[in-house]
Image (cartoon, rainbow, N blue to C red):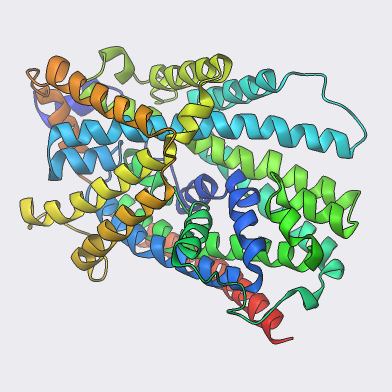
Length: 499
């Protein structure tokens, strides 16, 4: 069968994601409930020194983002790190990575769905109502909603993602201006005053802030659905870390500014630091409603969407490669979505929510995500050894050095971030994955059709002059937006520490 025959005889994933959609998918996957829970708790406990932890966390994702940008541009395939690892290292390593990634994403999806139920309940309370619906019912409804969105294809998912993120940014801006008058500059101490004396304590705070940057690589998992990926993927992964830094730092700045100094300990120990801080500062009514609206229908929704889109592409690609049932590799004839894989992700998430297992899966996320990142860095190194002549449309600066450095850094982060109570479950998952490969996949060769389909995906069209001008214009807008939010956040902390 020829490559062209594959293209004609089978439906294909559709290249429909623009730079804007790639950026909102990446930033949305990162900016979730974690910003308003563990990250904020760490930030308020450090005071002005939170900006140091935020800068370190930003640097911990900037270089990796560039590495993934290079690999994504060279191998714009569905399945992201799985596609990189199976090609650069080995097929079993790719499968091992995919299992861990899928578990992490489903865990995040379920946890975000339950968090939505909690924040929605808070929103109703602020409005003077009590939610009559069980949180599991609300969480399940949210899972069903995003399964439906993704069933209708990547175009629909991309448009909804843009809407969710711009709604979140809009509500955040309104909230900033509403509470600006309540910021007390006396709350901002000298820059280094909040750094703990113990190195391990500081490291754990940095990790807590870093979790609000994790997920930066999400968009490469949709590589087969991105327009002009050789240009779009690197640009999205260059810009996104700066936007995430700016948004996170601005929220930390306002949280520190409105939290009375005698309430810092209570707020840092709260499950909802922002709600606790606003209550302590006497900020009620409209600002609380605005923030809850932004979190529930913006931040939470924008994280849920990629959590369905991403793992379904991994399942789809693994099915095409012959290591999952063929039915998971089916594409919808009209919407070009891997609809069976999407539905499967939804069913698994619903089962975990109703069985009460989602807490365990969510606790496993740290270990699983770290495994995936470290495999990604190894893939970068091995890809240069295995395919030095591979066309690389964009090259990360000091890429091999960055891969080695981050392999070490993320190994340390894994030790600090892992939930030790969930580690036995992680080990069982890893053992099950290896057993699945050795007993189910090892003696089954990858279908030639899958290899040819992958090869055809790497034949990319170059934009014409008009398209290139449009791409550059869109990139300039996003670049200036990222610069503005980055400078505004850094300037706010500088101002706070100087006054």
